Image (cartoon, one colour):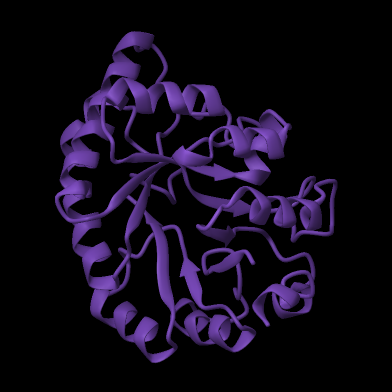
Length: 259
């Protein structure tokens, strides 16, 4: 049976962020994830997790000026110091929240910078992060994101992601496979997941088109969920989608799995 985590950045936006922990618990979720915890006191977030018996499944490393349009800084040669500082901050939060894996967002490829320098920067940064995280018992994840939603995003496909992981030489870097993003970029979802299962530590979902909940688009999610059980995927699946007509109203697809 798949394990689903509510993405509190995307779901339960009907209430303020801190109240979303309770809303997720009431809906039947036992795990949560979200983009960033850093705007909130880590002890407050830990209290919410404990109070509502929730597992913190995932959050991201600091990713630069998100409100200003940045989507990560790991590939930016002039931001290495900031990236390294962010790793330390992520560790502080992950340890306080009991979070065993964090995701790195590569960022948008900088213009006018040599491609080899961008790649070397990213590989060096993920190696640094993976080493620091490993010492604390935390996995580093890399997510590939489609370039329709985020033009120029540096990591945008499965092969590229796995090549970058291999180049790092680290045994503490894994693939966060986002079904929605990879449906847009590659398709061939089931076979890709099966072929790379040992390196996939986390899945996220949304349907396509629209990035709404499963059942609103072209992806055969009932088949995919059964397939994940068949191949032995035991990690979490983050529900990172835009509710089409309200969060609770759109949870019919997941209720059989939460029961």
